[in-house]
Image 1 (cartoon, one colour):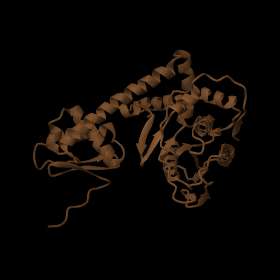
Image 2 (tube, one colour; image 1 turned 30 degrees about the horizontal axis):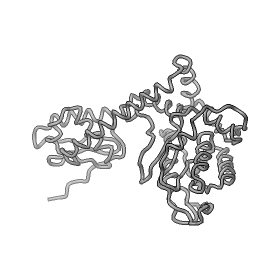
Image 3 (spheres, helix red, strand yellow; image 1 turned 135 degrees about the horizontal axis):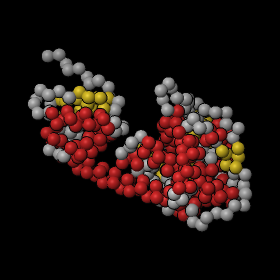
Length: 356
């Protein structure tokens, strides 16, 4: 059963929550991803205080546990108290065999939030096709599309993401962890709390008499993030008391380096073309070939291929010295093939050549 965090009189570290929200310059109305936990509850309250009448709450009911309806009721009561319209989407986040439950839920949540952000009527449809009524916008102008969404990820979420990336041997994009702002699906996604530990958010809520709902699955050690939170973070805090600040600084350095590599990739792809020409790729050093190919395939396929796939592709490009040299390699969810003097990516097997 989920527990509701009880209000109390804890002291609140100075700065913190209000400063993090004040640093935002979003387009209004602003969407707040509201799960009902302490982080998103603090985010909703802080945003509603700063932009009264210009905030819309977006709640995704994953339907994975009995407590899901408790989360939704908490969100509804919170939004009613702060006069914030609430949009609710229901998704089926059950993982299939071989899928990561955490990844399935995460991807489903982002898709649902993007769908809830668009308001083209007095209701929003959830993933199952059902419709749930939306409270009228307090401005009286009717629902308006949300272009900016804030997420409640905090400092410990960022550290967990970095540790997971290290455990997978990730490159710079993974080591950069979660960005403070990203643009996807025509939306801007903001994470204003990445410098704030969760205790700061809870103390801020208690000082204002606000409650939240604790997700019972957060104690389930079957999930990797929970094991990191329960076992790794306390050990790091004991050995390196400033680990949150230093790890976050490393993630920012990785993000800056990745931004530089992205700029180099764009410049190189301007020269090689997209899809890239083989001879133009061969004129680049191997490291820049890899960087350009990752950027090209990430755009074409939606995600970069594995390191071993890039290495194999680089070897094939190096060996491609004759017109008859064939390239046909798996890359991500599709195939990279040679067609004439260029590489092309197909989502699945390439189309057969037409008969002569």
